[in-house]
Image (cartoon, rainbow, N blue to C red; front, side, top):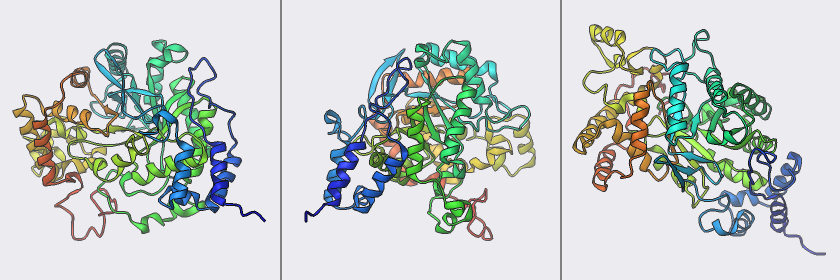
Amino acid sequence: MATININTVAAAILLSVSTTSAFTTPSSNIFRMSHSPIDSERRRQSVQVMMAGGFLGGIFGGDNSSNRVANAATSTGSNAKINNSGKGPTNEIIKKVNGMNQRRLGGSDIIVSELGLGTQRWVSSDFNAPNKDDIFKFMDYAILDNGVNLIDTAEQYPIPSDGKKAQEGDSELAIGEWMKARGLSNGESRKKVVIATKITGGRNVTPKNIKADCAGSLKRLGTDYIDVYQLHWPARYSPQSNWGQSLAYDINADKNPYWRGLGGPTSFEDLCLAMQDLIDEGKIRGWGMCNDNAYGLTGCTRTAKALGVTPPCSLQGDFSLIDRKSEENGVAEAASPYNENVGFMSYNALAGGMLTGKYMNKPAALDNNERAKIMEALENPRGRMDEFGWSRTLYRYRTEAAQEAIVEYSKIAKDAGMTLTELSQRWTRQRSLITTTLVGHSNIDQLKESVNYFTKSQPLSDKVMWEIDRVHMKNRLPIFSSNRVGKDWNGEGEIGETIP
């Protein structure tokens, strides 16, 4: 009787379902795969067979024979030296439009500008939120005239929303109204805009909700497809997905009934299959994660490749001069074009306004101990740190270590003949991890400054970059440091998050 090698069987199955995405234009059966779609049950059966032979274990660090199978199954010829799959290496500059570089996002054919429009506060109930007229001017200036093509939003936006003046979904509605008014909702002109939006994370992420929430976003945006559909935060427990100072994995938090009840969080397998269904239906071009880590990124990419479906093309995360964790915690290595080939959308490059320097000479209202000065700041707020609402969740940007670093970065900026805002944005643009930087603006003058910084042809000098690194080496995680943790807090941070 012949002996059957289970890894050989697994390889044959994987090769039979392996595919590369073949995105086409909206006019030719939007973004269909290059073969007939394989139903979810067959994909699941394939994975079960591969798992029986230890194949998935090989993907995540098993024996060499399994790794060779994975490499063979996902290789695409000319790009194999850089990455095992995709249209090309993430972050490569594809073209320049009105001085603005546009880069490849992950291994997809989605091309995004180095500056993206962040919309979290658009038409929100915040005291200085841009209204509809403002944001129409933003999009006209950035997208129609200055080479920006990326708008990042979410079904939960705007934040903050009060349920009266501003409601969740209003940001998508406003973007959709602008697209319709400018003739960009559908057809060939739709290509001028790259729309990234998000499904609410946590236990909301299920195959059923992925489909339903995507449909809701499409309706509000008034368009046929979304370019990049993302999880706002992971479907599973992850310490870095909240806005506090949690860094350590807490197994007790992970076993909480919220996460483990009703069968536990949606698996990587079900997530990848649900996203592929949306791609097959022409409703999205690509997908990604937000506020996730190297485990989540690699879990998604390797599961997708094992299933023969489209892997994520992006990871979105907090990133700035005072938050470089994604370069040093495995994310940059995992996302590299030599590894998983995933793009990175950075947000909060100005750290909630702290890296503009406007809070250096006079502390934010949230940090002031003098009643008179607190009242003065509340009556004439400089930004979100001068109010006592949702900005409390951003206390990480105001730690003593963070503010000490900000002072030093301000000195570097001054010596280089620029503002701290310019230094912060240009530094982010130059990092090898970053595909695009999402920046929020309160007024058109701020947007014009950002466009100027992202269209400067000369990079920051090696000297300036080294001086920044020297400051960084004094405290590599300043926003996750704190000298005001109370004795009786019993493992909780300032907003109730689990620490450390």
